[in-house]
Length: 102
Image 1 (cartoon, one colour):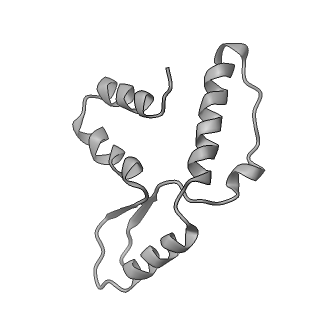
Image 2: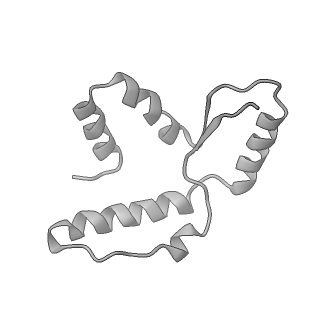
Image 3: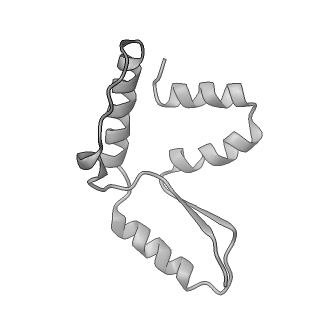
């Protein structure tokens, strides 16, 4: 049996419509709302599900798989190797800047 991990970026689905919103303390409310809005925007602008299906179809036709496959827009895929090679604090700052989180 061959297996692999498929790491997906944001996929355009209706997941945000059914997301439960938790109560957030006042100290974190502003940041939470900003992140929540961005997450919904990322999903709204995400990759079409048919593109994921086509990619999976190509993977299934391969004779041998790599351990990991990354699928999504460039900005989402590039974060994975950057996390491996950059110092943690620098990577987190980079991600905060990329996502416009203070």
